[in-house]
Length: 146
Image 1: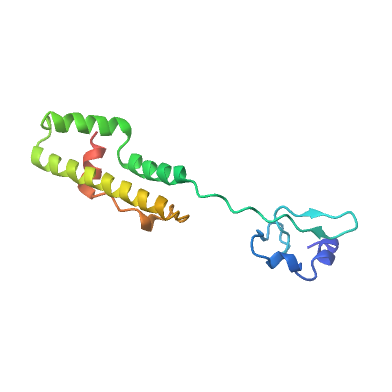
Image 2: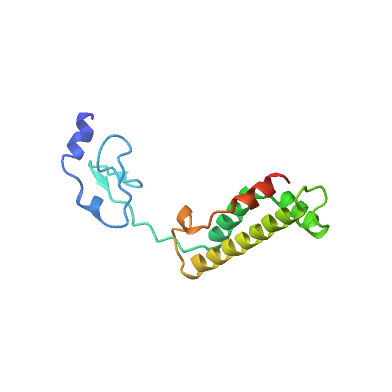
């Protein structure tokens, strides 16, 4: 650490521990706060506290859609729906294909239910895998064929 910076940060600034400030060791100097600015007379000015971001339901819906589309994109979904309506032509085991399709539809319903709950509770941890039900293996295997 260079001498000038060390002089400024012999002690951690009092405002660095205030809730709402983003304190990171971005330059190898503990105590520099993102958004702070140097003062003309030396030292650092504390940044204004960040406003709490409003909860955005659209982000939860996008997360849900992204997770569903990762298993079966829109083309695969249309093709599976068409095959189901036609009785699964070309599938060696139509009953197994239908069961896998139903499992996939039930999984999508469960995903949408979780999405609605996360939105209703304004749960900012919606990105955690633990919130979302896993896709049944047979449904994922069916989608991969389409």
